[in-house]
Structure formats: structure tokens, C-alpha cells
Image 1 (cartoon, rainbow, N blue to C red):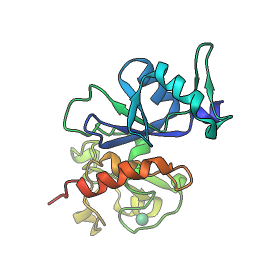
Image 2 (tube, rainbow, N blue to C red):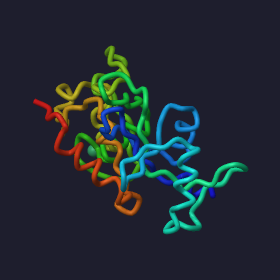
Image 3 (cartoon, helix red, strand yellow):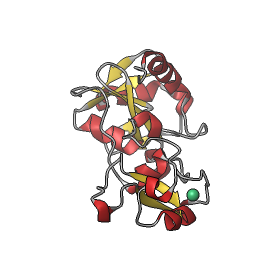
Length: 201
Ligand SMILES: [Zn+2]
């Protein structure tokens, strides 16, 4: 049961543009709150929990994989549609340790080494002692050696060059799901996003 709830579900905004990957647990909770609807990927029909329960009964092909509550037996949703999502169409990505590691792909941004998470550290480009803040633009991953070498200096002072210009990532950078986890039903929504995505200048 827990494993089903941890499976990934794709979240679309009101314009049917994918904005995030979440867990089935979170997806159901959003639908239960009335914030989202479940999409049946084959028909594009949208459902609340009640009607999804009826659809789930008919989905014989997924027999055995149900989420059960006293009143409902649900096939785990694979795609949900947010109802009232406002804003620029992208949910903001939280500035967190985990997301910095994901953005920088577990790679030292100075030398390109991938020594594993325990040998990588979050490095302030402009050191905090020189007024550098903790932000997407001022923090990158560095390996232990580069971090030591750079010490309390700016990259220029240390004669070190960043491999990329650090920016706040979009959800697309972070929503990398292993091919094993990626659901077939997502492809139609993801490829639509691929073609419609605004390219950065
Ligand atoms: Zn390095």
C-alpha cells in the first residue's frame, strides 16, 4: 500500500502544462481537498474521487493495484490537473539543499568531478564573509578539494572558473524521474510541454 502511495504522479496546471512530479499520496490529497482533478489519460476525462472510484471499478486491467479506504477503492492516479492554479504557470522551486544537489546534478561546478553526495559541499561563490548571500545565484556544489582551494575568496581571486552560471532552476530541471518510474501515460503531456516550452534567450 505504501509503495503505491509513493509512486510518482504528474501535475498539470490549468492550461494542461506539466509543472511538477509529485507522489500519488499528495495527488490524492489535492483531489480530496478539491484543488485538483484526476485525469484519465486515455480519454482526457477529469474526475473527482467519487467518479474516479467508479472509473477504478471498471479498470479491470489494473486489478490488484488499488488504494482502499472504507468508502473508496481507487486506481492510483497517474496525472492530475490543478483547478485553481494561478501565477505564471510554474510552481516555484524551493531553495533547499536537496534541490541544489539536483540542479547541479551532483557535480562539482568548478572541476566537474562527481565524487558522490558526501564529498560535495554547498559553496558560496561570493563568500559569506564578503557579503555573499545564500541564493540560487550564489550557491553551487563544489567538491571538497575545490572548496578547500577556493577557500574564502571569490572565483576571480582564486583563479577558478564556474562551469555554468547558477540560476534558479525550473521544475523541469528537477523533475527528472528515472525511466523506470516514468509512466507511459505522461508522454503525451510531457511532449506537448517540450514543444511549447518558451526558450530562454
Ligand atoms: Zn571540484
